Length: 421
Ligand code: AMP
Figure 1 (cartoon, helix red, strand yellow):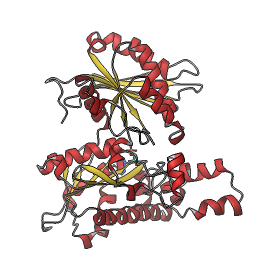
Figure 2: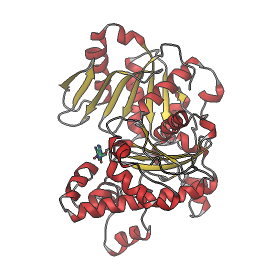
Figure 3: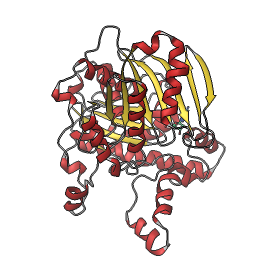
Figure 4: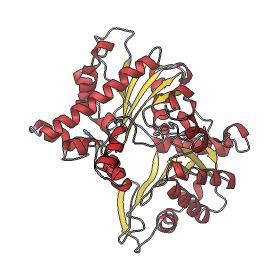
Protein backbone atom coordinates (compact mmCIF):
# COMPACT_ATOMS: atom_id res chain seq x y z
CA UNK A 1 0.00 0.00 0.00
CA UNK A 2 1.22 3.51 -0.77
CA UNK A 3 2.70 5.58 1.99
CA UNK A 4 -0.07 8.17 2.48
CA UNK A 5 -0.64 10.51 5.41
CA UNK A 6 -2.48 8.99 8.40
CA UNK A 7 -5.79 10.68 7.54
CA UNK A 8 -5.32 10.34 3.80
CA UNK A 9 -5.27 13.07 1.17
CA UNK A 10 -8.38 14.35 -0.62
CA UNK A 11 -7.92 13.71 -4.33
CA UNK A 12 -10.29 14.94 -7.02
CA UNK A 13 -10.49 12.02 -9.46
CA UNK A 14 -11.50 12.88 -13.03
CA UNK A 15 -12.45 10.41 -15.74
CA UNK A 16 -13.05 12.31 -18.98
CA UNK A 17 -14.78 10.55 -21.87
CA UNK A 18 -15.57 12.08 -25.25
CA UNK A 19 -19.00 13.32 -24.07
CA UNK A 20 -18.90 12.66 -20.35
CA UNK A 21 -16.88 13.51 -17.25
CA UNK A 22 -17.06 11.45 -14.08
CA UNK A 23 -15.74 13.17 -10.98
CA UNK A 24 -15.24 12.09 -7.38
CA UNK A 25 -13.51 13.46 -4.32
CA UNK A 26 -11.76 10.48 -2.77
CA UNK A 27 -9.90 9.96 0.48
CA UNK A 28 -6.66 8.29 -0.57
CA UNK A 29 -6.36 6.25 2.62
CA UNK A 30 -9.75 4.55 2.75
CA UNK A 31 -11.34 5.24 -0.66
CA UNK A 32 -14.33 7.09 0.83
CA UNK A 33 -16.01 9.42 -1.66
CA UNK A 34 -17.25 12.67 -0.12
CA UNK A 35 -18.53 13.72 -3.57
CA UNK A 36 -19.25 11.83 -6.77
CA UNK A 37 -20.92 12.92 -9.98
CA UNK A 38 -21.22 12.87 -13.73
CA UNK A 39 -21.26 15.49 -16.46
CA UNK A 40 -23.19 13.97 -19.35
CA UNK A 41 -24.09 14.69 -22.99
CA UNK A 42 -21.17 17.15 -23.17
CA UNK A 43 -20.83 19.13 -26.39
CA UNK A 44 -24.46 18.29 -27.18
CA UNK A 45 -27.71 20.27 -27.04
CA UNK A 46 -28.69 19.43 -23.44
CA UNK A 47 -25.63 18.70 -21.28
CA UNK A 48 -26.27 18.02 -17.63
CA UNK A 49 -24.45 17.39 -14.40
CA UNK A 50 -25.62 15.15 -11.58
CA UNK A 51 -23.86 14.58 -8.26
CA UNK A 52 -24.14 13.06 -4.82
CA UNK A 53 -22.81 14.77 -1.74
CA UNK A 54 -23.49 13.99 1.93
CA UNK A 55 -25.87 11.23 0.81
CA UNK A 56 -28.05 13.61 -1.22
CA UNK A 57 -28.51 13.54 -4.97
CA UNK A 58 -28.66 16.70 -7.09
CA UNK A 59 -28.71 17.60 -10.77
CA UNK A 60 -28.52 20.65 -13.00
CA UNK A 61 -28.54 21.48 -16.69
CA UNK A 62 -25.61 23.20 -18.34
CA UNK A 63 -25.73 25.61 -21.26
CA UNK A 64 -25.95 24.15 -24.78
CA UNK A 65 -22.63 22.76 -26.02
CA UNK A 66 -20.97 22.89 -22.57
CA UNK A 67 -17.89 20.66 -22.36
CA UNK A 68 -15.37 19.41 -19.78
CA UNK A 69 -14.20 22.92 -18.84
CA UNK A 70 -17.74 24.00 -17.96
CA UNK A 71 -18.34 20.87 -15.86
CA UNK A 72 -15.13 21.44 -13.88
CA UNK A 73 -16.03 25.14 -13.43
CA UNK A 74 -19.47 24.04 -12.22
CA UNK A 75 -17.95 21.59 -9.75
CA UNK A 76 -15.67 24.30 -8.34
CA UNK A 77 -18.17 27.15 -8.27
CA UNK A 78 -21.48 25.44 -7.53
CA UNK A 79 -20.51 22.34 -5.57
CA UNK A 80 -17.12 22.59 -3.87
CA UNK A 81 -17.21 26.32 -3.03
CA UNK A 82 -20.51 25.82 -1.20
CA UNK A 83 -18.84 23.15 0.93
CA UNK A 84 -16.30 25.53 2.49
CA UNK A 85 -13.33 23.44 3.41
CA UNK A 86 -13.73 20.75 0.72
CA UNK A 87 -12.21 22.95 -1.97
CA UNK A 88 -9.20 23.85 0.18
CA UNK A 89 -8.62 20.20 1.11
CA UNK A 90 -7.93 19.03 -2.45
CA UNK A 91 -4.32 17.91 -2.39
CA UNK A 92 -4.13 16.57 -5.93
CA UNK A 93 -6.10 15.83 -9.07
CA UNK A 94 -5.93 12.30 -10.45
CA UNK A 95 -6.84 11.67 -14.08
CA UNK A 96 -7.79 8.31 -15.51
CA UNK A 97 -6.00 8.04 -18.86
CA UNK A 98 -6.92 5.14 -21.12
CA UNK A 99 -3.77 4.78 -23.21
CA UNK A 100 -0.18 5.36 -22.23
CA UNK A 101 1.25 3.11 -24.96
CA UNK A 102 4.74 1.89 -24.04
CA UNK A 103 5.63 5.25 -22.58
CA UNK A 104 4.11 4.67 -19.14
CA UNK A 105 4.39 1.65 -16.89
CA UNK A 106 3.48 3.65 -13.78
CA UNK A 107 1.28 6.58 -12.83
CA UNK A 108 3.06 9.93 -13.23
CA UNK A 109 2.83 13.55 -12.16
CA UNK A 110 1.57 15.57 -15.09
CA UNK A 111 3.93 18.09 -16.68
CA UNK A 112 4.46 19.34 -20.25
CA UNK A 113 6.49 16.25 -21.16
CA UNK A 114 3.72 13.93 -19.92
CA UNK A 115 1.05 15.93 -21.77
CA UNK A 116 2.98 15.60 -24.99
CA UNK A 117 3.47 11.84 -24.40
CA UNK A 118 -0.30 11.42 -23.87
CA UNK A 119 -0.76 13.38 -27.10
CA UNK A 120 1.61 10.94 -28.85
CA UNK A 121 -0.71 8.08 -27.82
CA UNK A 122 -3.82 9.68 -29.38
CA UNK A 123 -3.53 7.42 -32.44
CA UNK A 124 -3.89 4.41 -30.11
CA UNK A 125 -6.98 5.79 -28.31
CA UNK A 126 -8.50 8.39 -30.64
CA UNK A 127 -11.76 8.72 -28.70
CA UNK A 128 -10.36 8.76 -25.17
CA UNK A 129 -6.94 10.43 -25.03
CA UNK A 130 -8.10 13.74 -26.58
CA UNK A 131 -10.86 13.91 -23.94
CA UNK A 132 -8.31 13.25 -21.17
CA UNK A 133 -6.16 16.09 -22.52
CA UNK A 134 -9.17 18.42 -22.45
CA UNK A 135 -9.78 17.40 -18.84
CA UNK A 136 -6.16 18.07 -17.89
CA UNK A 137 -6.27 21.50 -19.53
CA UNK A 138 -9.57 22.38 -17.82
CA UNK A 139 -8.29 21.20 -14.41
CA UNK A 140 -5.07 23.19 -14.84
CA UNK A 141 -7.13 26.36 -15.32
CA UNK A 142 -9.58 25.63 -12.51
CA UNK A 143 -7.00 24.46 -9.94
CA UNK A 144 -3.82 26.49 -10.57
CA UNK A 145 -0.93 25.11 -8.56
CA UNK A 146 -2.67 21.87 -7.54
CA UNK A 147 -0.53 18.89 -8.65
CA UNK A 148 -2.09 16.55 -11.20
CA UNK A 149 -1.35 12.88 -11.74
CA UNK A 150 -2.15 10.60 -14.70
CA UNK A 151 -3.08 6.96 -14.03
CA UNK A 152 -3.06 4.79 -17.16
CA UNK A 153 -5.34 1.82 -17.93
CA UNK A 154 -2.51 0.27 -19.91
CA UNK A 155 0.30 0.73 -17.35
CA UNK A 156 -0.33 -2.42 -15.29
CA UNK A 157 -0.01 -4.60 -18.40
CA UNK A 158 3.41 -3.19 -19.38
CA UNK A 159 4.95 -6.17 -17.55
CA UNK A 160 3.60 -8.58 -20.19
CA UNK A 161 6.41 -10.51 -21.88
CA UNK A 162 7.00 -10.02 -25.59
CA UNK A 163 5.57 -13.41 -26.52
CA UNK A 164 2.24 -12.28 -24.99
CA UNK A 165 2.06 -8.86 -26.61
CA UNK A 166 3.48 -9.27 -30.13
CA UNK A 167 0.93 -10.14 -32.82
CA UNK A 168 1.88 -12.65 -35.50
CA UNK A 169 1.99 -9.84 -38.05
CA UNK A 170 5.03 -8.39 -39.84
CA UNK A 171 7.28 -7.18 -36.99
CA UNK A 172 7.72 -3.83 -38.73
CA UNK A 173 4.11 -2.94 -37.83
CA UNK A 174 5.18 -3.09 -34.19
CA UNK A 175 8.45 -1.24 -34.73
CA UNK A 176 7.06 1.49 -36.96
CA UNK A 177 3.48 1.90 -35.71
CA UNK A 178 3.38 0.41 -32.20
CA UNK A 179 0.89 -2.27 -33.26
CA UNK A 180 0.98 -4.73 -30.36
CA UNK A 181 -1.22 -5.85 -27.51
CA UNK A 182 -1.45 -3.27 -24.69
CA UNK A 183 -4.46 -4.40 -22.64
CA UNK A 184 -6.88 -2.20 -20.71
CA UNK A 185 -8.71 -2.18 -17.34
CA UNK A 186 -5.22 -2.33 -15.77
CA UNK A 187 -6.22 -0.14 -12.84
CA UNK A 188 -9.07 -2.51 -11.98
CA UNK A 189 -6.99 -5.69 -12.43
CA UNK A 190 -4.30 -4.18 -10.23
CA UNK A 191 -6.78 -3.16 -7.53
CA UNK A 192 -8.51 -6.54 -7.28
CA UNK A 193 -5.27 -8.52 -7.40
CA UNK A 194 -3.86 -6.44 -4.51
CA UNK A 195 -7.11 -6.89 -2.63
CA UNK A 196 -7.08 -10.64 -3.35
CA UNK A 197 -3.56 -10.88 -1.91
CA UNK A 198 -4.82 -9.15 1.22
CA UNK A 199 -7.75 -11.59 1.52
CA UNK A 200 -5.38 -14.52 0.97
CA UNK A 201 -3.03 -13.16 3.63
CA UNK A 202 -0.05 -13.08 1.26
CA UNK A 203 2.19 -10.30 -0.10
CA UNK A 204 1.03 -8.96 -3.49
CA UNK A 205 4.24 -10.12 -5.17
CA UNK A 206 3.66 -13.65 -3.95
CA UNK A 207 0.23 -14.37 -5.49
CA UNK A 208 -0.90 -15.71 -8.85
CA UNK A 209 -4.36 -14.44 -9.79
CA UNK A 210 -6.73 -14.74 -12.71
CA UNK A 211 -8.76 -11.54 -12.65
CA UNK A 212 -12.00 -11.33 -14.67
CA UNK A 213 -13.32 -7.77 -15.01
CA UNK A 214 -16.81 -8.30 -16.42
CA UNK A 215 -18.80 -5.16 -17.12
CA UNK A 216 -20.19 -3.68 -20.31
CA UNK A 217 -16.53 -3.83 -21.34
CA UNK A 218 -14.85 -7.04 -20.20
CA UNK A 219 -11.30 -8.32 -19.94
CA UNK A 220 -9.36 -10.97 -18.09
CA UNK A 221 -5.76 -10.89 -16.86
CA UNK A 222 -3.22 -13.51 -15.81
CA UNK A 223 -1.24 -12.05 -12.91
CA UNK A 224 1.93 -13.80 -11.79
CA UNK A 225 3.65 -12.71 -8.57
CA UNK A 226 1.53 -9.53 -8.68
CA UNK A 227 2.48 -8.64 -12.28
CA UNK A 228 0.31 -8.87 -15.38
CA UNK A 229 1.72 -11.49 -17.76
CA UNK A 230 -1.22 -11.68 -20.17
CA UNK A 231 -4.58 -10.05 -20.73
CA UNK A 232 -7.41 -10.45 -23.22
CA UNK A 233 -7.69 -6.90 -24.63
CA UNK A 234 -5.16 -5.98 -27.26
CA UNK A 235 -4.22 -2.93 -29.30
CA UNK A 236 -7.79 -1.83 -28.67
CA UNK A 237 -10.53 -2.93 -26.25
CA UNK A 238 -12.14 -5.02 -29.03
CA UNK A 239 -10.03 -8.13 -28.52
CA UNK A 240 -10.83 -10.92 -26.10
CA UNK A 241 -14.04 -11.72 -24.24
CA UNK A 242 -17.59 -11.25 -25.49
CA UNK A 243 -18.72 -7.83 -24.19
CA UNK A 244 -21.95 -5.83 -24.03
CA UNK A 245 -21.70 -4.55 -27.59
CA UNK A 246 -18.14 -5.58 -28.65
CA UNK A 247 -17.46 -8.86 -30.39
CA UNK A 248 -14.18 -9.85 -28.69
CA UNK A 249 -12.06 -12.42 -30.56
CA UNK A 250 -13.20 -13.15 -34.11
CA UNK A 251 -11.57 -14.49 -37.24
CA UNK A 252 -9.86 -11.43 -38.77
CA UNK A 253 -10.87 -12.84 -42.15
CA UNK A 254 -14.41 -11.71 -41.30
CA UNK A 255 -13.25 -8.09 -41.70
CA UNK A 256 -11.98 -8.86 -45.19
CA UNK A 257 -15.21 -10.67 -45.99
CA UNK A 258 -17.31 -7.73 -44.76
CA UNK A 259 -15.23 -5.20 -46.72
CA UNK A 260 -14.54 -7.09 -49.94
CA UNK A 261 -17.59 -9.35 -50.35
CA UNK A 262 -20.31 -7.43 -48.52
CA UNK A 263 -19.13 -3.91 -49.36
CA UNK A 264 -19.05 -2.56 -45.80
CA UNK A 265 -17.10 0.69 -45.36
CA UNK A 266 -14.67 1.18 -42.44
CA UNK A 267 -17.19 3.17 -40.40
CA UNK A 268 -19.81 0.44 -40.78
CA UNK A 269 -17.30 -2.23 -39.76
CA UNK A 270 -16.25 -0.15 -36.77
CA UNK A 271 -19.88 0.34 -35.65
CA UNK A 272 -20.67 -3.32 -36.21
CA UNK A 273 -17.74 -4.64 -34.16
CA UNK A 274 -17.86 -2.06 -31.35
CA UNK A 275 -21.52 -1.14 -31.00
CA UNK A 276 -23.71 -3.84 -32.53
CA UNK A 277 -22.00 -7.08 -31.56
CA UNK A 278 -21.40 -8.95 -28.29
CA UNK A 279 -24.39 -9.71 -26.05
CA UNK A 280 -26.50 -7.22 -28.00
CA UNK A 281 -25.60 -8.61 -31.39
CA UNK A 282 -26.17 -12.26 -30.49
CA UNK A 283 -29.37 -11.72 -28.49
CA UNK A 284 -30.78 -9.01 -30.78
CA UNK A 285 -32.32 -7.78 -27.55
CA UNK A 286 -29.97 -5.99 -25.14
CA UNK A 287 -26.36 -5.47 -24.11
CA UNK A 288 -27.41 -5.53 -20.46
CA UNK A 289 -26.67 -8.77 -18.65
CA UNK A 290 -29.46 -8.29 -16.12
CA UNK A 291 -32.07 -7.81 -18.86
CA UNK A 292 -30.75 -10.89 -20.69
CA UNK A 293 -30.87 -13.06 -17.59
CA UNK A 294 -34.49 -12.05 -17.08
CA UNK A 295 -35.37 -12.66 -20.75
CA UNK A 296 -33.55 -16.01 -20.71
CA UNK A 297 -35.65 -17.24 -17.78
CA UNK A 298 -38.72 -16.25 -19.80
CA UNK A 299 -37.54 -18.40 -22.69
CA UNK A 300 -35.93 -15.81 -25.03
CA UNK A 301 -33.64 -17.95 -27.15
CA UNK A 302 -31.38 -15.11 -28.28
CA UNK A 303 -30.77 -14.12 -24.66
CA UNK A 304 -30.06 -17.74 -23.71
CA UNK A 305 -27.56 -18.12 -26.57
CA UNK A 306 -25.82 -14.81 -25.80
CA UNK A 307 -25.29 -15.77 -22.15
CA UNK A 308 -24.09 -19.27 -23.09
CA UNK A 309 -21.51 -17.87 -25.50
CA UNK A 310 -20.40 -15.23 -22.97
CA UNK A 311 -19.81 -17.92 -20.32
CA UNK A 312 -18.24 -20.44 -22.70
CA UNK A 313 -15.71 -17.93 -24.02
CA UNK A 314 -14.88 -16.68 -20.54
CA UNK A 315 -14.37 -20.26 -19.29
CA UNK A 316 -12.02 -20.93 -22.24
CA UNK A 317 -9.90 -17.90 -21.31
CA UNK A 318 -9.78 -18.91 -17.65
CA UNK A 319 -8.69 -22.44 -18.61
CA UNK A 320 -6.02 -21.06 -20.94
CA UNK A 321 -4.67 -18.78 -18.19
CA UNK A 322 -4.22 -21.86 -16.02
CA UNK A 323 -1.74 -22.84 -18.71
CA UNK A 324 -0.09 -19.39 -18.59
CA UNK A 325 0.34 -19.42 -14.80
CA UNK A 326 2.17 -22.30 -13.25
CA UNK A 327 -0.15 -22.25 -10.27
CA UNK A 328 -3.28 -20.18 -9.52
CA UNK A 329 -4.08 -18.92 -6.02
CA UNK A 330 -7.41 -17.29 -6.85
CA UNK A 331 -9.86 -16.52 -9.61
CA UNK A 332 -11.42 -13.09 -9.04
CA UNK A 333 -14.73 -11.86 -10.44
CA UNK A 334 -15.22 -8.10 -10.61
CA UNK A 335 -17.08 -5.42 -12.67
CA UNK A 336 -20.88 -5.01 -12.77
CA UNK A 337 -21.48 -8.58 -14.00
CA UNK A 338 -18.65 -10.24 -12.05
CA UNK A 339 -19.70 -8.55 -8.81
CA UNK A 340 -23.42 -9.20 -9.14
CA UNK A 341 -24.33 -12.07 -11.43
CA UNK A 342 -24.50 -15.37 -9.54
CA UNK A 343 -25.85 -16.93 -12.75
CA UNK A 344 -22.78 -16.05 -14.84
CA UNK A 345 -20.32 -17.07 -12.11
CA UNK A 346 -22.03 -20.43 -11.58
CA UNK A 347 -22.29 -21.16 -15.30
CA UNK A 348 -18.59 -20.39 -15.82
CA UNK A 349 -17.39 -22.36 -12.80
CA UNK A 350 -19.49 -25.39 -13.75
CA UNK A 351 -17.68 -25.46 -17.09
CA UNK A 352 -14.36 -25.52 -15.20
CA UNK A 353 -15.04 -28.44 -12.87
CA UNK A 354 -12.22 -30.32 -14.62
CA UNK A 355 -9.81 -27.78 -13.09
CA UNK A 356 -11.23 -28.44 -9.63
CA UNK A 357 -13.57 -25.45 -9.44
CA UNK A 358 -16.70 -25.97 -7.39
CA UNK A 359 -19.18 -23.29 -6.52
CA UNK A 360 -20.98 -22.97 -3.21
CA UNK A 361 -24.50 -22.08 -4.30
CA UNK A 362 -25.51 -20.13 -1.20
CA UNK A 363 -22.27 -18.08 -0.98
CA UNK A 364 -22.52 -17.39 -4.69
CA UNK A 365 -26.12 -16.17 -4.47
CA UNK A 366 -25.31 -13.89 -1.55
CA UNK A 367 -22.40 -12.20 -3.28
CA UNK A 368 -23.70 -8.96 -4.87
CA UNK A 369 -24.28 -5.25 -4.28
CA UNK A 370 -20.73 -4.58 -3.09
CA UNK A 371 -20.14 -7.76 -1.10
CA UNK A 372 -16.58 -9.10 -1.03
CA UNK A 373 -15.52 -12.66 -0.29
CA UNK A 374 -15.07 -16.26 -1.40
CA UNK A 375 -17.66 -18.40 -3.19
CA UNK A 376 -15.88 -21.71 -3.67
CA UNK A 377 -17.43 -24.79 -2.18
CA UNK A 378 -16.15 -25.70 1.27
CA UNK A 379 -15.99 -29.29 0.05
CA UNK A 380 -13.46 -28.39 -2.64
CA UNK A 381 -10.05 -29.79 -1.83
CA UNK A 382 -6.84 -27.75 -1.74
CA UNK A 383 -4.92 -26.88 -3.87
CA UNK A 384 -7.79 -25.72 -6.15
CA UNK A 385 -7.88 -21.93 -6.54
CA UNK A 386 -10.09 -19.84 -4.33
CA UNK A 387 -12.90 -18.05 -6.12
CA UNK A 388 -13.29 -14.47 -4.94
CA UNK A 389 -15.80 -11.74 -5.70
CA UNK A 390 -14.15 -8.34 -5.22
CA UNK A 391 -15.87 -5.03 -6.02
CA UNK A 392 -13.43 -2.97 -8.06
CA UNK A 393 -12.54 0.59 -7.10
CA UNK A 394 -10.51 2.30 -9.80
CA UNK A 395 -11.10 5.74 -8.26
CA UNK A 396 -9.37 4.66 -5.08
CA UNK A 397 -6.32 3.43 -6.98
CA UNK A 398 -6.16 6.78 -8.78
CA UNK A 399 -6.42 8.65 -5.47
CA UNK A 400 -3.76 6.42 -3.83
CA UNK A 401 -1.35 6.83 -6.73
CA UNK A 402 -1.88 10.59 -6.79
CA UNK A 403 -1.28 10.88 -3.05
CA UNK A 404 1.81 8.69 -3.25
CA UNK A 405 3.30 10.60 -6.16
CA UNK A 406 2.77 14.04 -4.68
CA UNK A 407 4.21 12.75 -1.41
CA UNK A 408 7.26 11.47 -3.24
CA UNK A 409 7.44 14.19 -5.85
CA UNK A 410 10.84 14.33 -7.48
CA UNK A 411 11.34 10.55 -7.22
CA UNK A 412 12.41 9.70 -10.76
CA UNK A 413 11.51 6.01 -10.50
CA UNK A 414 7.80 6.59 -10.14
CA UNK A 415 7.38 10.05 -11.57
CA UNK A 416 8.98 9.90 -14.99
CA UNK A 417 7.69 8.45 -18.26
CA UNK A 418 9.46 5.30 -19.42
CA UNK A 419 11.32 4.93 -22.71
CA UNK A 420 9.10 5.14 -25.82
CA UNK A 421 8.43 2.83 -28.76
P1 AMP B 1 -20.24 -2.07 -15.55
O1 AMP B 1 -19.88 -1.74 -16.96
O2 AMP B 1 -19.10 -2.58 -14.73
O3 AMP B 1 -21.01 -0.98 -14.86
O4 AMP B 1 -21.28 -3.31 -15.62
C1 AMP B 1 -22.49 -3.23 -16.32
C2 AMP B 1 -23.05 -4.63 -16.49
O5 AMP B 1 -23.28 -5.22 -15.20
C3 AMP B 1 -24.41 -4.66 -17.22
O6 AMP B 1 -24.42 -5.69 -18.19
C4 AMP B 1 -25.37 -4.97 -16.10
O7 AMP B 1 -26.52 -5.66 -16.56
C5 AMP B 1 -24.53 -5.89 -15.23
N1 AMP B 1 -25.12 -6.05 -13.93
C6 AMP B 1 -25.26 -5.14 -12.94
N2 AMP B 1 -25.95 -5.68 -11.90
C7 AMP B 1 -26.29 -6.95 -12.24
C8 AMP B 1 -26.99 -8.03 -11.62
N3 AMP B 1 -27.54 -7.89 -10.40
N4 AMP B 1 -27.10 -9.19 -12.30
C9 AMP B 1 -26.56 -9.35 -13.50
N5 AMP B 1 -25.89 -8.38 -14.16
C10 AMP B 1 -25.74 -7.19 -13.54
